Image (cartoon, rainbow, N blue to C red; front, side, top):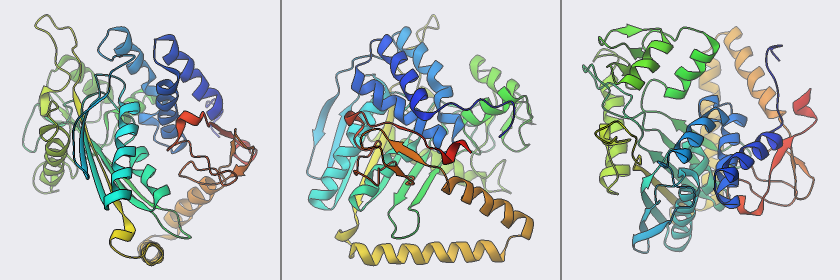
Length: 381
């Protein structure tokens, strides 16, 4: 561990966030859900969406853009679909409710899709997709976001980083979890580089002139001033590296999250009054769940997933140098040693989905049970 790093237990960090949210008027249940989503991001190594985001929520709650105790309402519903209004509250509680609803619909009729509007930043997209794993379902989650991405051949940011997450259960291997922005990187990644005083790789972002830059601070300043430039779509600049594909994926997310639900889209999110005061973000999210056994037997699917995992590993080994391979597997083994202690039954377990192997309590699916996890002895080595 870097000598400059300070390690804090997940339990202490969760409780700190919990106290902050409650101090700002958020209910205990909603505060716990939001805190656990933020801490899970850090535990999964996604520092750009972890507790570093807490200041953003504090500011939003203080200035009234985020509602501490929102009224979450279901506006339309069919056996397989639903539309929910999040009441301008924190994105995490409403999103967990929406994903649970999508999973329940999948359990009942095979598939479930729920769209959410009038929401705010909801954390890591993968959190919600992974909720489906415990039910032998494939889960999907996506959201639009603040306009930070410059369209192909454009100069001004018009689209969000608009992440997409999909999770699929496996048998003996770890589940498949894809959680990615449709831009080169997220805004949070730039913030990480700025905090560390490091230049960002060329090809991630452009300056106010539309030219490539490695200055994270300059890009973030331009975001705040709406001075031009921004992140590039997934694929990079222009046609040569097919950045138009990331551009298209970002538009797709806006269609499902915003146009379908009635939320704001493109550069209409995070509006301001004529005198520059922030208004509710009106972000949109989209959640989906597929029950695996609606298509084929679950055991057959999981065996095939393990086979697919093996193919991926073999392809990686064949195409990777010895040095790269050593670094890759040492990282995997280090993460595999991560151990948590369930605060309900005291069992130690290793399960990336957040489910306790001792009593079955799952922090990601049932945060109302007040289940928290702290780092075990192995993590402190």
